Length: 176
Image (cartoon, rainbow, N blue to C red; front, side, top):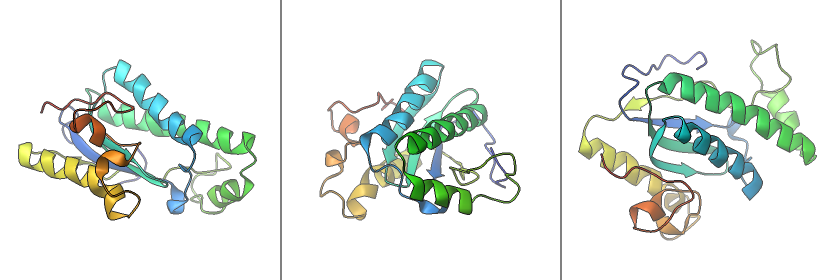
C-alpha cells in the first residue's frame, strides 16, 4: 500500500479510507471514468469486500470498507484502477491529464511512466456506532459541503441514496 506510515491494524474491522488522485487532478468528471472505480469495487465485493459507505468526487473518493484482506484489496483496487484509468485517458486522448500524471510522479516510481493515485490511504479504524455514523455522514455530506448538490441523495456517486431507502449504484451494508 505504498509508503504510508498509517497501517491497517485490524483488517477485519471496518475502516474509513480516502483515495486521492495524484496532485488532486480532476479525473472523475465523466461517467466512464467513474465506472472503472465502480466496476472494480463490484469485483472486490464479489470476493468478500463489504462497503458500508462511499462517495466519489472529481479527484478523490472516501470509503468505509471491510474485508478479511483489506490491505491486499485496497492495493489491488489501486493498482487495477490506475492501469485502467491511464489506459482510458490514453484511449480518449486526454493528454493534459496524462502529462500531469507523468510530471507529478514520485521519483522512486521509476518502473512506470505515470503515477495515478497518491501513496497511502490513511486508514482510520471505525470504533463503534457513533464513529461509524460520523464517517457515513461525512462521506454523504462531502458533495453538499462542496456546493455540488443541495441534498446528499442528489449526488449520483454516493451511498446516500442507499441510506435514504433508495437504490444506489453499489449495494452497501447498512447494518453495523
